[in-house]
Image 1 (cartoon, one colour):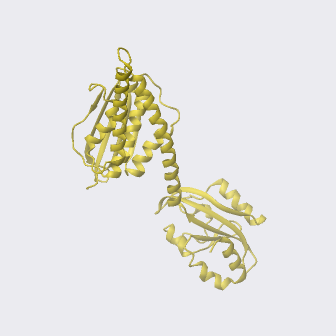
Image 2 (tube, rainbow, N blue to C red):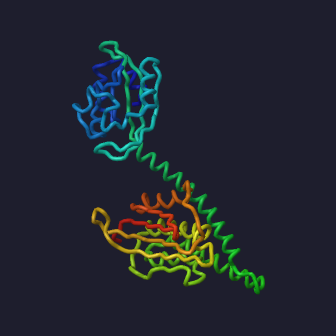
Image 3 (cartoon, helix red, strand yellow):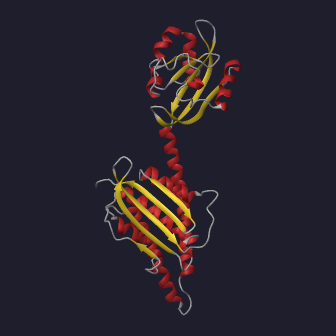
Length: 332
């Protein structure tokens, strides 16, 4: 049953409608002309962890902690009452008390109260948190594919430019270039398909194309941490992105640059086992912290938060870029 069905039902049969409205699964409010709540269905109380005393007679914009107090939404709703207009799927993203961070879609339509002829507002709220997250994930995946293809082409070009030409025959150059390109391919395969990766092996596999000199990149040997397949894939994506950026703009773009990668096991704020991986660059070119963040930064944060269930801290320190990725340590 959609908003139009409810509108017609309430006009035709008020008594019958009350019982049906109470069975609607989505939260529903009836607002007076001054946008005060005069009725709420059980779904509203359940969804927002509230009760009748905290809802009925309260202005819509004062519900909860004032999450609905949005000037644009208020103007839209105030126009519905006198003009018989409608509002559909106005998005409100807020931290609701007792519920948490949610994305809600608000729809509203005017109707005439069957008892007294009063103009009232029928307002429904749809929890679109999961749907929006899936849409964001889809956009991230599409953007990630496009971004990684571009990065792969950039890394391939960098490998071609950095492969020594002087004093080599065409065949020697070809063999050297193809060797580094195959190393890049192996690292991508490990990070995306490895089913039982150990953290040191994963880091070395992803960094293999850049290990042209042992002194430039330092990778810790311990602790040995087994990774879930999904964690190996996501962490490999993050490391590949960090290495790509270092090769383009950071420590790996200059001969004297150095990168140190290590990690430790510990507990998080909730005293649960976690892993913290650290990336430290030194000796890179001078730079200024970016004024805006591109897709690469978004992808790192998205992979850390939504795929690893942790967090990522990126620090554009004067001595060199630093990154710290923390995520839960799950038992295999």
